[in-house]
Length: 318
Ligand SMILES: [Zn+2]
Image: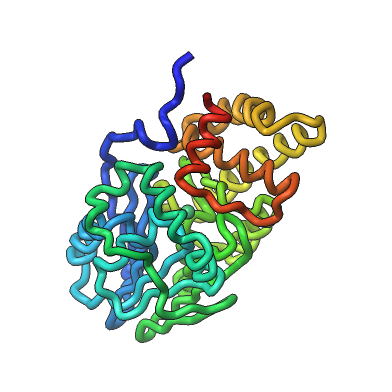
């Protein structure tokens, strides 16, 4: 038996970037399952949603933005705190970095550990990691529940619709165009990362997104969904994956199995259905570990450190 390379360390193949136009105001920077960046163009300013992992990687987003508008990039939204989405923020020179208060609380509590952990997991996504300024990415504006940003005549609602991928998840919603930017709450043809998740809450949060009836949706990973049918498929795929992990883990715990046995069972059960999704092998050990924690003794996600990542991997994959 060969040992699986840790997390995404064996994933070194560059992805092809697509810059999709959803409307005159909404664009998606996607890359075959790598973390996406959303772009909202208002009357006088641009809002960037999730930044890429490093300032050097963010330069490619800026280059694409400059192909469609010369308006200044004044706002960055962090949909949640994960390093792979926030550490490129300084490249945009924005006036304001916006996040939910819950996201800021997570940056205070575990931002340093998450930075070290994610840099170890994703060597390809942290290209030119030396361009990340020292310290962490801090929001300059925080909100709880709902905040409305008026980009001239364009209304942008920033909404916390419930916990799911993390405690602080925020979506951006253009009510006049029914376009939604979900962050990692929704993935498409990519495995949801649930190492910091709330399994019990996530499906209900997806129902809250569905209730808005988006006609287009930019997921956290995967192609932009540009029809209501595609949006429904993206929501259903994510919901099914989370429900399937939880059901298998609950059954294993009820049967008195330990984490390693539960992981083996769950991986075997899920692989035929989801094994072709991007980063399946990377995510599953983290997802099952978090779900096992939630079902047993830890209502809130424990902090991942670079060391805990390796110990968990050795225990489950060794
Ligand atoms: Zn994330």
